[in-house]
Length: 127
Image 1 (tube, rainbow, N blue to C red):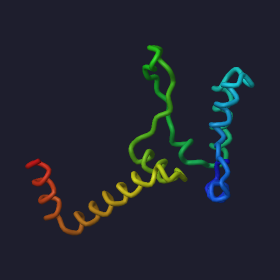
Image 2 (cartoon, rainbow, N blue to C red; image 1 turned 120 degrees about the horizontal axis):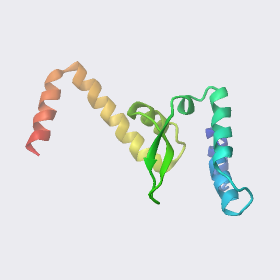
Image 3 (cartoon, helix red, strand yellow; image 1 turned 30 degrees about the horizontal axis):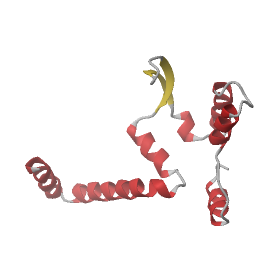
């Protein structure tokens, strides 16, 4: 289940929630499918057609994997990462979301009063 309302109601009913990617990975571990990549690529393509911004703004780069091989990896810039985190319907993401909101509020305050920017910079420098 991937949509927020469905996850919310399932969790409040005490049901375990697994997203699409989680199901694909479990099926691979149980030997029900041999390749993850085609399934994930198909899912990404469907999400792009639906206009999912997280997928359409995602790029791939070759990065060094744990086993030492170069693998294609999805990457996003910091703004896209913050949008992605905001869309995560999980209590585990809440502390980061709160921190993000605090930083944004501080930045808006500093835009209103540039003296705050200087004071914060001095405070960080002294640390």
